[in-house]
Image (cartoon, rainbow, N blue to C red):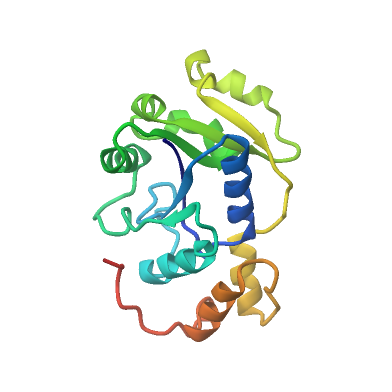
Length: 207
């Protein structure tokens, strides 16, 4: 089994996330892609995230129409910082024998040496790095050991130019976000008054 893993704050999830995941799934013949909203990402310690239950619910809504996409709350249900090495252990335990492919942006892969226990991360997964226009692939060769480069697959994807930061800004300013994310996510944002400073009460992380 070839299992894709896509982590992120998904605050909110948008079509850029979904498109990259689908390109990676098709190009590398993945059986499924598991979307895992971050719990407490160590690289964003001062970033105020939307409540976990809302981010999980939006991710569920956005992925429900693709039978190859699965949403997981494994990072939201555990305490402390969310490290990739720990998440990979949990996913592997739940899917013994599966080959794990971590889908992420190429900028994140270029910083892999700063990750916790990065040598174990590279043993546990192969990276599918989504290239963006203007990124110098030679930087990977300059920064990473040859053994790491062998476990990094590059996928070219259309740059959709969508970001969660911009979606939140547009909501605050009363601007349209249709066609940036799934209609169900837009409805959820409106129903719970997310990103407007008038968020409805949160009920906590999903079980």
